[in-house]
Image (cartoon, rainbow, N blue to C red; front, side, top):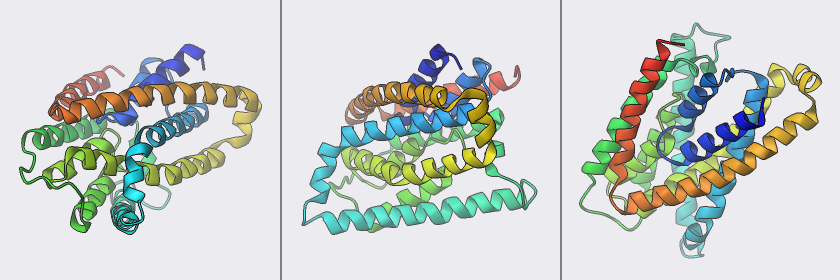
Length: 281
């Protein structure tokens, strides 16, 4: 993989991962436009490293805001809400994954990852989340609370679980929108959405490492070299980290200024672009 391709993918991943526009859809489409196979082990390894870079960007950016959550008087409540939402995500996400693999993909050896490269499905997911973002941006609950409660965290967790099997259905777009529609203030909805991302990302990264190791560990290392893989991955991680920090500043600014719905309009336009591209690939 060429260094320019790595840098392009890193910037796209870093920006799109932390904006409500679906990083996976953007990275897969960008990779295909550059002639890359998103299922190839080298590409999988790079994407894992890029996800790691954006996770560090989230930690650095939000930590000053999250510290208030973990003061002694709020620590238990914050942990409870994160646990409730994450548990709901696990139940819904795993259940939906099993149902799709069993009923729609043919059973025992089917893997939901086989859906990830299907661009019409990706376009439908982008379109759906675009509508949700626009609706939440124009119909925010007028009774805004400065905190979050168990019911709200449960619903946000369920929505996050619904996003997991579908590339193109932005996790941050859906979870922030779910918070806004329930009357959670914009800063709290944003903080809670990305706190959930930090909880969710390490298990996802570990799972991807295991899938990668199972798929082609020896062939990949022998053909490409571990030094080459690590160098490419570290370069990509640094650039995805930088792009992620800039994207978070943009997201916070637009959310605070009431421009949330414009991300939805972008998702609608992107869904049309992905759908048109699917006819030529």
